[in-house]
Image (tube, rainbow, N blue to C red):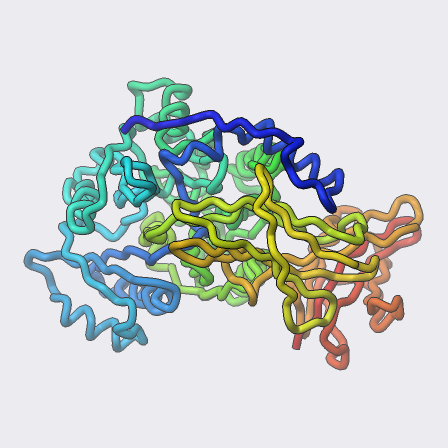
Length: 564
């Protein structure tokens, strides 16, 4: 398939500049410099996993030890979209009636449940399944399937699944032209893809640069980064990036953390360093959130390639639900769930026991494959969160992208303890759309989300709105020199109800003082900080507070939301 591209010329002086600030002007300038020609390249649009999906594909494994995992995934996923289960149409231990009875006995309902006949050999559909995207075939954008090469494993039925599905669904199939597995491809949705350097080993007839350019061409990317292999952390020969990293929005990546005595510790830290210095579509480095990888049942971590690799990043995002692996390790599992909740506001986080998968080299993500929504709709937005410089009229910039007519776009916001959102229009100017939150005060805390209405659908960003939203406030003015704010003090869960955890701070000294103040500046809670977990006063009412941690010469602060 030949990719099409065209140049899109835009003029800054044509933009409506009412209420525009220097911050917005710089954002527009960046998009003019880097995105002219990118936004217009709609021949192939590659969706991210966290964007809107129609549903998820699963394979029935006919295995007593793993069927319950498939059932649990289906039970959670069917609340968010369709669940297609591929069953073996030949001689098999159970037909669709028996499979359905089993699912119903495990809490799955008939709602959004479908069965697809397919010749398969294993359940690892992430790796051999289709890579779905949108493309222009002369009549607007429609979904199609890339078929990655999967010939090295001697499983021709698995290898044929993309073409089997393409025939049944009448989607155009295209060969990718590379040998790789889907678990070794991660996309940020706008700009870049990631994979491990094992892809080089799988395609010896091409140079690394040729592979990179081919992937950029096929998926209409501006960049593709090959990350170093984790050779001593378990998971088998595949060395897939989805076993240790997860892109959760256009700007944020979860990455596993490991104890510093493990042989791959320097490798994973160098990957984090690379990501933290790599610009997103918006020109700022990715925000990397660390999520500790749990030990095996014996309390140890893998130190060789073929050992068990437990992971929390090998999860599935299916619309407003995230299905995360668990391991019957309450402290570790609860910590992972809290990190997801902290960084994915409004999402429902469901944990599914994956011990029978990690012993085989995979987890939840490996046995699932999301199917993108029928119509392409996207809100491109650099989220505004945490402390900001005060602006009385605050501009929220964004872009609408759709394969159909855009009817309208709206900005919803609420301030402080308001329960309802105010709705204001987003002006569909070129090249940057914008909405304005007016008449703000320096002590305001603002929560907001965006809505796009098109001929084919209505979507929000974040996808979980209005339950999920982005929250920011204004940095206090007049703090003494040496005080560092916001990002340096990491608190979770936030919102909190009963307790909070202060992430370990490099400069933590004893004694340190922790105080919680209301927005009027009154201290409502105070304690000497000598451990990272703090029990919150149960009498504190719901609301927004300022949390401070200080010593004689250092002070760090952030916002804390308390919800009962």
